[in-house]
Length: 451
Ligand code: TRP
Image (cartoon, rainbow, N blue to C red; front, side, top):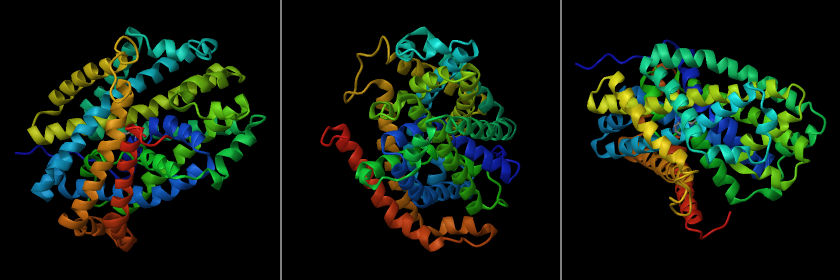
């Protein structure tokens, strides 16, 4: 008496939806600030190497598990081997932690879009604008609510009509807008210095931190280790080529991250001459530095509005995938209807998100490990839960469930071209690298090492 599972209608629909999940704030907001902070070219080089090794291995594994079982994370792992249902529960926890705070940042993007649309570039470029906004109470929650409601409507409509259609429109628009703004930015006087910094690897800046930062970013950017790709794989048709689709999704995701850097890093150079402080600004880079850049541009308010519109599109397709991950897990596990599950998940996200948002304002006395609420949730999910899930996935598939499951699924349509490489990555290299990430993250949070 199972409901018939919906699916994406064709390969392009699947690839665009998965790429829509992957491409988001991770690419446009997180990647540029990390690249700027960790030495530009060298960070990109490391990231690229990791993308084609670790990223490829985990993504193909997750999508294969999803398509093989036709289920979302908890049930999928239980079906493959009763003992590993725990991985599904951890993935479920991670996705319930990430979704609310992701939507809080989504709300900030809505706010900046409105600011630019109403022509308030000058105000947005002021030093205090960002802080004043995020520490407020009602306003950030209002925009967060708007963002969540958008997301919920698409998820409620479902896979084929909602998610696929939204991605097929939003993704191509996103690419065109990104290329256009990046071209504009790199052709400004003084931008070439920034392009050089961004592209030429400076090996003296290489360190373990670079690798670890790049690895964390890879998870985040490619929507790995949280069950999202398992869910999306479960909607993939058997006749679609898995290996090729994974390559396309990765290419999409990586290309957009690098393009986003072309918008932001050279602009920072134009604006600040590339001083260390401006480059190391971190999370606020997009919200604080970009408005200043726009203020100094001709047609800045229009370009700024287009920029934030683009960020909003990308964030929406990702938040849709996050909420879909939660909803599909609950629907599969407890047999609730999609409508009811989406409604309840939305209520949960609204409450949690409101609390997280207040974590910058009236609740900022709540601190864990010295971190505010949003940073703490980001840390627990990205730096702890996701690598742990990655390790468990590699070990369970590599040694207990056996990689044959993945080979079979990939070989449904053609040869698995990089099978040997995949197997070594899955069993040995990926788990070791991931264990290093976790140790590093814990050591950093505990203050044993300084970054
Ligand atoms: N990948 C998205 C981004 O780059 C965020 C995201 C969506 C995500 N789904 C995920 C991150 C699942 C981790 C796991 O913004």
